[in-house]
Each structure stands twice: as C-alpha cells, then as structure tokens.
Amino acid sequence: MAITFDDLPYASEGSGISTKAAIDAQHRIVHTLRQAHVPATGFANEDKVVALGPVGPRLLAEWNKGLLALGNHGYSHFDSNDLNTESIEREVVRGEATIRPMAASVGRAIPFFRFPYNHIGDTEAKRAAIEKFLADHGYTLAASTIDTSDYFFNNAYERAFAKRDKAMMRRIKHAYLDHSRIQIAYYGELVRKVIGREVPAIMLLHANRLNSATIGQLLALFRSAGYGFVSLTEAQRDPAYSTPVAATKFGPMWAYRWARARHVKVDGRLEQEPPTWIGAYASGTP
Image (cartoon, rainbow, N blue to C red; front, side, top):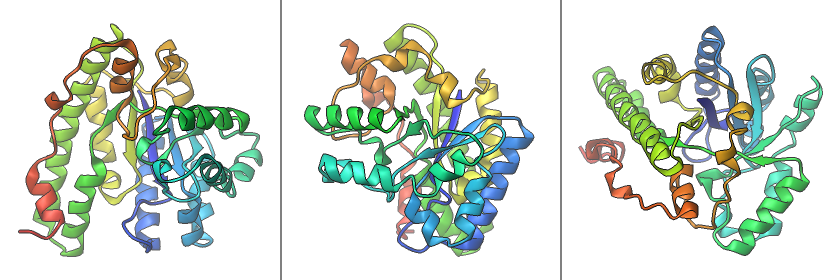
C-alpha cells in the first residue's frame, strides 16, 4: 500500500487556515510516518502554502526528505469539470511554484499530479488533453484505490473540536476508524474482483485534524488487513495502473474505473456509506 495525503499543508473549509492547526497536524502526521518508517506522498495546493506565509514552505520541506515526497495538487483546489484545458494547465503549472524548486534543491523531481476530487476529465477530449499536458510537464497521474470519506468525518470532528466536546471527538474517531476498516476490506475485494489478483493499494487521505489524531491507528488498521507500505512510485509500477481509464464527471476510485474499462459488472450500492449521524452533526442538526 502507498499512503497519500491531499491538500497540504493543511485541509480546511473556507478561505481561512489556522497556522497552529496546520503546524500541529503536520507535526503529528510527519512524526508518526517517520517513526513507523512509512513512505508517503503529500500533494500540495499552492494557494494553501501561500495562505500560511513563511510557515507554508517550512511545513512542505518536511515532505521533501527521507521516505516522504511531494506531489502537485494544483494551485487551488479546483474542479476540472468547471474549467477548459488551458485553465487546467495553468492550475498545474502554478501549483509548482513552491514544490518544484524545493524538490530540485535536493535533487528530487515532482513525478505525480493528483486532481482535486479525482476529476480527470469529464469528456474524452478533455481527458486526452489532460493526459498529454501532464506527460509534457513530466507528471504521472496519481491514482487512488481506497477512499474512507475522511473529509466528511473531519467536518464533524472540527465541530466537536470547536465545541471542546471531547466525548463527541472520541465518538467520531471511533466511527471513522470503524468505517475505514470496512472500506479497506471493501476496496481490497473490489480490486480482486475486477483485476483478478492483488494490486498495490493507494490510500487517499487528507492533511486534516482528524487524520493527524488517528494516523497511528490508521497505520495499524492497514497492517492488520495484511498491508505493508511502499512508495507511490513503486505501487504505480504495477501493470494494472497502465489500464486506460475513461472520461467521467465523477471521481471514483480506480477499481470502479478499471471495471468500466474491462466491462466487469460491479454494484457500487454495496459500498457502505458513512453513518448519517456524522453528516447531521457536522451540519449542526443535533
């Protein structure tokens, strides 16, 4: 399994980013990954780097050494469905402002780009154009095979944190870890059904408060499911990741894309949704 984090330096709702929250989250995530000797790729949004001022590049620098690596997530958290190919390419290039020279300063490249929302082209013409300009800029499209809707749980966790409701924070963490356990098993079986064998998994996480509080437990979940840890580069060397994927306005995990390409019938309704109370609490309903 390859571990990936989106929305570096810190995922936050709205335009405001708390410097303290970003520093605390990154410290926990990076420290835990290093202590566990786990490779990981962090995909940065340049506008989030800029919003944190001098702290932004300092936090990213921790992902530019050892087993950690940087990836490009665009200048902003844009939706490619809403942009033409020229605008998308500008987002890709502007997203390099900090990470490209930072990586080059230590002899590294930025080999992967991941689109926000996993939207890789809603028409075939756009998808093909995206594939070409990514290749022209030296990028491989970063895949993902396991999604736990961590952002959804994090919205609830942030509300509990703001209310200083420690009991609710614990409840949300437990629900998130239970859901993650189910999703890890579900997506592993889905890949085996579609591809017919084991394929290195790619875990999609976000650099948020909830994951910083649970990263050690998440790593334990992966290990208990039989996973070891590899880099994203090593994971995507598997031939399965060379399977062409079709255009879609949605952002499904790769097993669903492979199923469509291979004409394998799968029933996405079997995938378990997060508990409804999580969304209700996040929206302030209770």
